[in-house]
View (tube, one colour):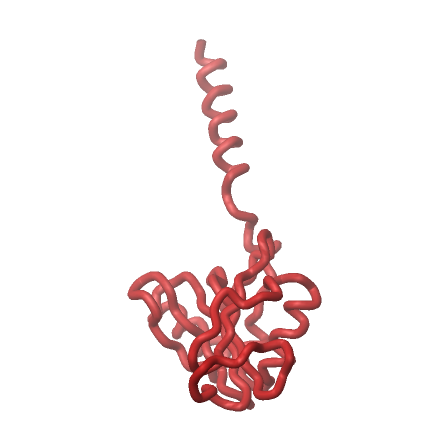
Length: 149
């Protein structure tokens, strides 16, 4: 009786573990690109080419910032946080759609991550990033944004 209870517990644990997201060792970390020394094209183009993000933006803001959804199973991270969206815009670049308002800058890029702003900011600054950290949804979503080199 004791063996079958242990077996059932191990089976349940294995089933639960199979449903968890992949461990971070399989993640693609965007930390080096978020040093804010690049431009939106150099940040977005490889992600599109390697199919880490969907090619069609899920949203284009009035200021022309395009928000791309990570491709299914891409497991993108930034400073240890899971990426919810990849952001970018570069003037006169076919990779990006133009919004109906004034563009944010000639080139801007970044990500929205799942995590509290204070923790994201601490990790980004510890890594030496010059990105602007902005709270999107309290305790849930935080933007990491670079506005050109």
